[in-house]
Length: 262
Image 1 (tube, rainbow, N blue to C red):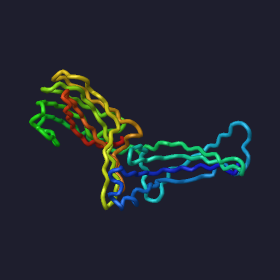
Image 2 (cartoon, rainbow, N blue to C red):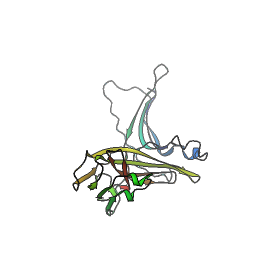
Image 3 (cartoon, rainbow, N blue to C red):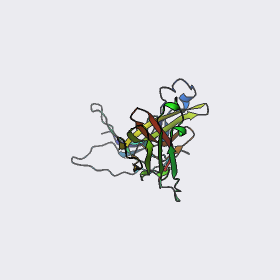
Image 4 (cartoon, one colour):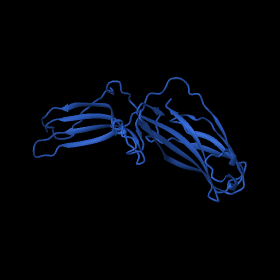
């Protein structure tokens, strides 16, 4: 072989959603991949490997380029933060070079200090809803509940409870929807896109009135990361409580979340 090398790369890839393409000319500069880390080491000089199994130990210090920040691994729709290791074995003229890539996961260090919980109580009635076309045609309902905290530790579940105090129409389903809000942009403007990460049904059918229904959601790895805000992009999270009534009225209450690693 002509040498074996190992390359470590980390980058942020930003993509524009279909609705934003063409709207901002200036975007095309700020949408280029942002390289966080890039280094190559030669593991083995050109030569011949002995028969049998050869193990070559290695280590890479995670030193970033210039004033860049080591962001946590995150797989989104319009923002992707990924770290990879690539091994290349160059070979002589007749044999094809060998290459293999694998991803490794980066977690940021825990933040010092204690997280202050921020409990939220909510009441949903026809009067509290926004974006309603015909309020008069809505059936009467009263839904109360609370989230134990909207400041969340990413390794711990989001918890709370919900009570349907009364509802004229039968309840069909109650769901918890976790949403990622990704913003890409620059001084000229921003493209903000909200997409669903996961949806958990917490109640099915016409639930008993006055019965506390637990709210419990674990944040999925890789698809969530601590809330992130930089000059070119933002990654934020929200949770929606969605109540579907039998006459197909959809009631949604939105709560912004702040995720951090402790």
